[in-house]
Amino acid sequence: MVNKEVDDKANFALGKENYLYLAIGFVIIIIGFLLMVGGGSDDPKVFNANELFSFRRIVLAPIVVLFGFFFEIWAIMKKPKE
Image (cartoon, rainbow, N blue to C red; front, side, top):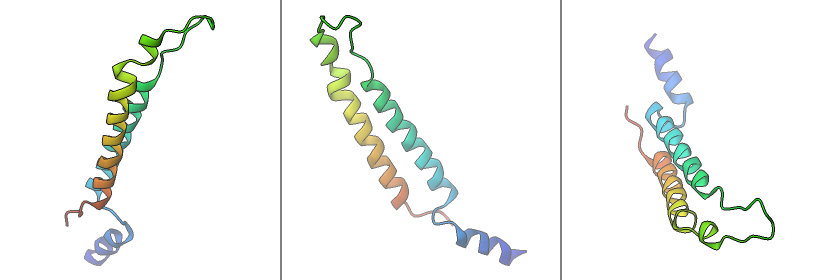
């Protein structure tokens, strides 16, 4: 019984905690991309620069996405607990 548990742990590259952190990082990246959505106009003759080039889309969203990618790298590199 003990040997089977050791074999099961040996089959996974990362620990359970690492996979949880990977899922959290993925959600952070999705949130960042959702912050970039929008800014369009229903009328093709109207250009709303204030909405399109807002702080949320130009600054905040890319920072959130980059944080999510760095979080993913950290989650992969983190040594799993034994």
